[in-house]
Every structure is written in structure tokens, then in C-alpha cells.
Image (cartoon, rainbow, N blue to C red; front, side):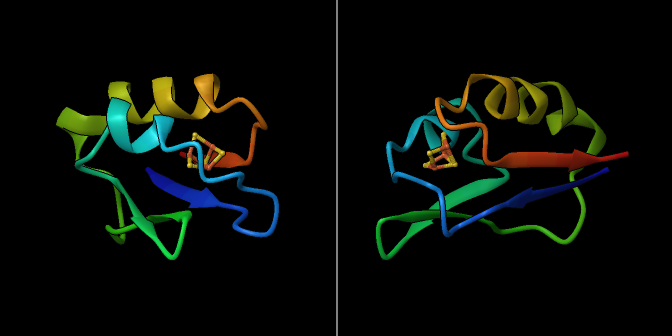
Length: 62
Ligand code: F3S
């Protein structure tokens, strides 16, 4: 599974990093995905982060 953040529209709220720090990190007030592919054990949290992002800029690719 892969995750992607559309950084242009990310508001930098930091929720994704709070929910899933294994996959997301803040960089210059925007979230970025720090892993090439999401490990199985982080998949659930990563999907949760994507669905809870207030501006829905996290996309998931299976
Ligand atoms: Fe940005 Fe959404 Fe995360 S706004 S900081 S990608 S929760």
C-alpha cells in the first residue's frame, strides 16, 4: 500500500502525524509521507489518517 499527500492543499493541521507518525511527518508546515510503502502493521492507522484529514488530501493506493 502507498500513501500520498497533496501538499498544495494540505493545511498543516498535523492530524495525520498524530494518528500515524509511522507514515506521516511534518516538513515546512506540510505533511509528507516518509515511507516508500506502508508496512502492513501501519495500514489501518494510515487509512484512518486519510479518512480523518479535514481537507481530504491524503490518498491511498492499494
Ligand atoms: Fe495536512 Fe491533512 Fe495531515 S491537512 S497535516 S494531510 S491531516
